[in-house]
Length: 338
Image (cartoon, rainbow, N blue to C red; front, side, top):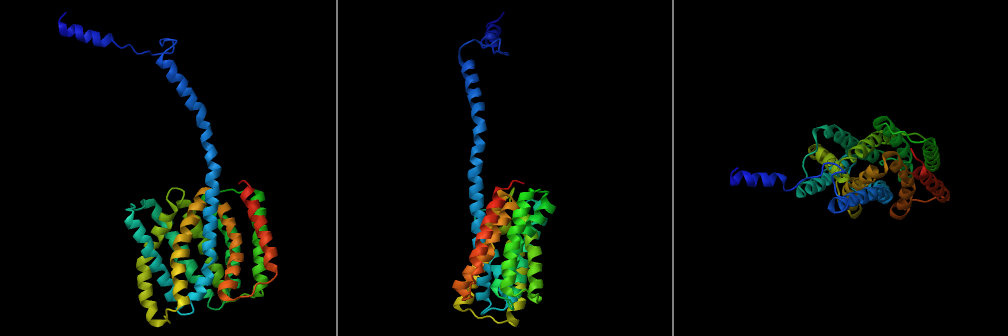
């Protein structure tokens, strides 16, 4: 045997590796590693304890979105004081798309997957174009109090769309609380408006359907995309249409930048259309579409409060009673398990 063969043979037998628990020594490093492994395995079940914190954060984000949305009708009413309805919606779309596009570009966010574009188109059609346009046309002849009937029905409609689109199955207690809350809000808003159906009502009910579809699809996409990217790409998708729309509408409508019309346009474009939808979709992704949608039961009442302070509309004594009923229903839907 040569010296080289002898060295090779020593390397082959120098470090024997145990292949079974019987081969391992009773004491030493392998036993220590086994104990550490068992300790790690014992600690792993503690991780889900962080989930309740995430749900609280998601609920807070959805609530911030609802608060932002509650100012949409008053800001639109301000905008219509100096800007025509078609121009207002077009400019709102362009401004919010530029903000969203700038954020996406600055952060070098990659393009969405090809499979996500149809869903983004639904979000764009429902929340970027459909709902703003139809509600703006309605507010030409309707008060903000009357228009609040839309957001009163929107949680229930969104929950229905969620069931059809995602296969969610909320419990009976959830549906009972949702229907009770919707009935309270609808009863309040219809009583305020006198209960008469007008052309504005047709616009509002159309807005209700398209917005619920957009919310549902956006909430689904936010399950695997950051919420701000969902609305960001939906806004960017509408930018070419918004530019063309503004070029056609501005020469034929009133356009006067007063303090109210400027503030209304900027808030509708950035505060409601971008930032509001950003936190809203993030919240829906955490706590689920049906439960997040029930937080919107508070939106009509918040809108009425803003209308009193910003537009000078009168608030009836029925508002506090409805507010209590709505808060009870919201609490019930958050506790109900689907």
